Image 1: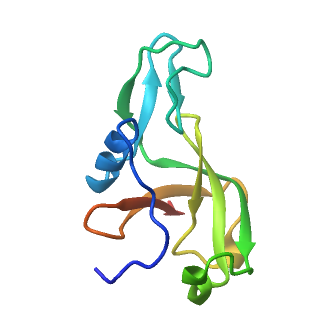
Image 2: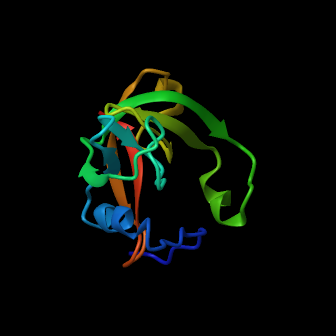
Length: 135
């Protein structure tokens, strides 16, 4: 594992289980049984019925590209060597949308609706990030 120079997320007591799932190469989402509702990102309450009764459930890690953009601007020096790179919003089959990076795909092959699956990137010994690639 090479040195990772990009900014890293800092898990807190509420998001640590999500990061632990990623480390185990499992994409966890909040699930609210009262509304049969999957949710991401973490929130104390269900966006459908405001319930506080929820659990972590494993997502299939599959979905489709909702929207995407090709980044040409260097907003942080650590991304300079990757220009251009793809940022996307993936709509998971369970419903939630996630901001992510698309990998292992030629830029001219990307289109909205394209099927994708999660690909975990173990960026440090402590942090694994979900990215998405063609299914």
